Amino acid sequence: MSGEPKVSVYIAARNCAKYVEAAIESVLRQSMPDWELLVYDDKSTDATPKVLDLYRGDPRIRIFRTNGKGLPGVCNLACGEARGRYLIRLDGDDVFEENILLVLSNYLDSNSDVALVFPDYYLIDAQGDFISLGRTPRLFERNHATDLPPNGACTMIRRDVLLECGGYREDLGAQDGFDLWTKLRGAHRSANVNLPLFYYRRHGDNLTNDHGRIFYARREIKREMAREAMRGQGPYLAVIPCRRNYDFAQDLWNERINGHTLLDIAIKTCAGTEIYDQIIVSCDNPEAEETVRRHADPRLRFHLRDPRDTIRSRSVAHTLDAIARIYDPEGRGVTTLNYIHTPFVGTQTLEESVFTLVLNGADSSYGVEKVISPVFRRNAHGFEMLNPRREFASDFDTVYIESCAFVTARSRLFATGALSGPSVVNFLIPGDESFIINSQRALEMARVIYKDKGAGQ
Image (cartoon, rainbow, N blue to C red; front, side, top):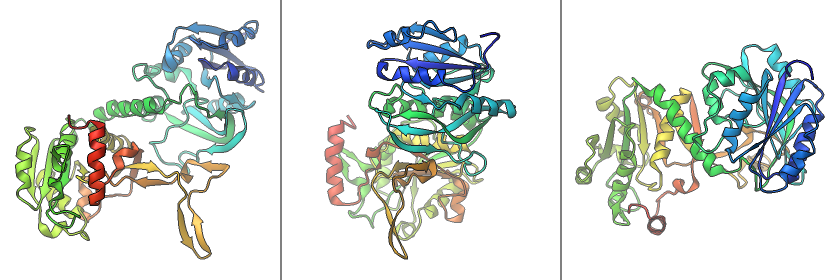
């Protein structure tokens, strides 16, 4: 191959002997010949090295052995070693469609303002059988969301832009494209093409399938990106509303779980982060102020709530508006509403609700869960399923349910009686944090769960 290749493809392979041959062969079949392939065997203990040895004679392929660098580390090594103008990662268990390099590189050639481009994909199982088509609506046309990054693999990026933004972070222990997405979106445009150009294999041993690590890595990325955006803004308020009546038990805030009142737990959750300037407990029972006084945090305040604002048919926005008039009179800040009914909500989740809102410039931020079970609504002909399993589906076909555990919103909204503005963003939260105490039975269950989790010790 004369001169420098246009595209550098790299494969991060660890213990994927039964798949990596198909991955490499899919590069060799590309309709565009102007490429190089870098393959990193990251301390495999299976037959992966033997499979890679079959390709050492091809001058377009360079094979490296690394000592357990992990995916982010391999990505950075490839970025430094690559000679191509454009860079794209192929996981060792995935497969390119034969035109992916041609289509994506031509797109970048034709759109000099775009730094990153990604395609749709086919989802396949461990045996390579078709499951569904993963489709993302066109950015800036139907899809204006900024909180949904593309699949980290099979995304083509200009190598100089990747070097300019410092490559991939290696301190998070996971890499799924979210880090790069957040780095690029402020200064560079991204785009997508609605053609399925790779086969994404879903199986139990995926290199990027550690959802827990990815989940917490995303949280850390949001934290660091948002802190810069939060400087000089605010105030940031946390409000814990409670009441004497109208719950299944009077003064529910004073019910105990493992020796702690529900109000104590909510206060501790809010006080666990320094991002809030004030933490306000609002209750129509003055006795709740005694609970507030037991906590040493200087940011804690007690607000005597109007009993008329505690009835079930009245929006909590009235209480929040009264608080905002005191602590954020200009309406420039952000308020997180944390309910006593959801004692398993974590401090990091409350933080993420603020970070997600700030990073996306949104009006409101909610925690949600994906709905896996079928959901129906009635139409003129009977019941219609809202979330049918489809072979051809996009991100917009997924159905979510609000956790009802908390909400973060711009304080200016409360004067209108609303908790949500025109721009609403969501983020996934762990399912157990959505547990709601709305009955005596749920309270007893919460006591058992809380004890088992060892919380409050």
